[in-house]
Image (cartoon, rainbow, N blue to C red):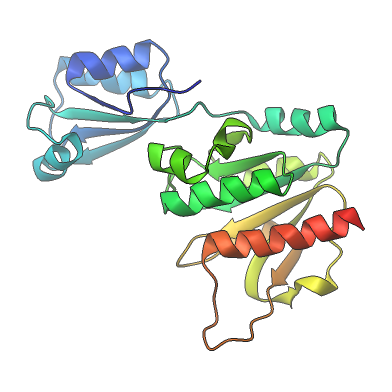
Length: 246
């Protein structure tokens, strides 16, 4: 389901968004504002996965675009999130080994949109992103995905490391991208697999990397030593595709 309104501002509008079941990614509240209506909004937010941020008036005004926000702004998802089980079910329905993208704190909406597009074209069954410190399904992500967001489920989870552990019980192996790893051509990337792509600046976090079974590096022949996160995802994804076809 697609939402037409992505930003909700004003106490009544935000409270109604939560109560009507809209998927809210982030809630911004004016720092120090703790009256009854705000407490009701916070109470509703805590029933969901929304991240609550207390910010100064300048930032809240900037988010709202006006000064009439009444101390609260909510940012909703452009699309509904799937569940991890939905992604596994998609693989079962196709009679295929699961192929899942796991994104560790991707912050740029253009990167996320491009990765969702690549995941769809590579035949992946879904994408998993973290609840915190990462971009959600914004309108920019939807546009950059070039329509792929309509076909590729995206699940949002609280803990990436824990999710990897749970998926290992389903038979998946995990490979992450890192310059210090084994050349990707030397790895066996067939079978049920999760491809882990890290943050644009810091790469895959240590805790997540420790959960991975393989660490893959992409051969570099140029004068710089790194690829954009979405490009690296595409290169590794198609090495997985090549091996699956063979």
